[in-house]
Image (cartoon, rainbow, N blue to C red):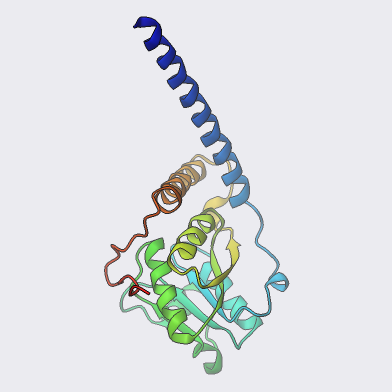
Length: 215
């Protein structure tokens, strides 16, 4: 009996050690991936017909508007905007305005989303209303992997091209608060991976959003 318990104990220790090293290695990769410089605007596929800028950090809206100016025929959704906030307030706060009316009319504000999952639902509904098929997702580097995971889960019919930015919070990268931020984002990514890939559960609990009707 004691020998069996010892074998089980050693096995559990070995599994825990492997899992720990996998998580540590994953975190190192996550940090390296999140700290990459933003992609060149010229490398964005020309067939992208929509842009989604996720609020919650600096440089995201500015990048979304820069992408819109690059191809003015595109449509831009700023997802997760506070209630009662108007486009003029956003343009003033980010220093990107005023914009020509012909460009401003291509921008929509999403006031429902309060989480990344909410961003995905809000975007799916907007893309369906506007008949869009290929979206550029704009968010911070540390938020991009989880955003793509949630968007693919909720709107698998959409093609997604990532465009990540580096907010001031990521400089310097080895600052204590930056490391805490990265650990927090990494844990959220792990949770999303477990829910979507392993448990295969789509989160329908977002207030104001409803699951699609069964096909």
